[in-house]
Amino acid sequence: MSSASAIYFVEGVLLVAIQEDISDTDILDLQEALSERVMDEAARAVVMDISALEIVDTFVGRILAQLASMSKLLDAQTYVVGMRPAVAMTLVELGMDLPESKTALSLTHALRDLRGESRG
Image (tube, rainbow, N blue to C red; front, side):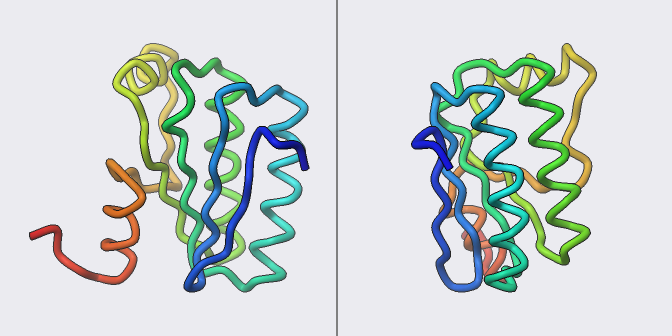
């Protein structure tokens, strides 16, 4: 896998950091690596941090949705965290959403939700 993304396993959760310079090839590699890691680690959740992405195109948006769908099929809940307002607006303008994933403002918020803790 390239340095444009990284996968860490912590407390049953795969943390995926997607870097700004990720290419279409990199994201396809990430898709394959993530699906293998979900199975190998028996991950209960996947948290994808996209805070480094300033913009997304239809390809990246579609792949994010596919990663979430794939994780759900493998019994891992998916969170997308760190979405910038411009990215959210672009996804809406493109008519895309991420139906198989939850969103959270940050990794901390996603982990709190996974632990069943309130945001208090």
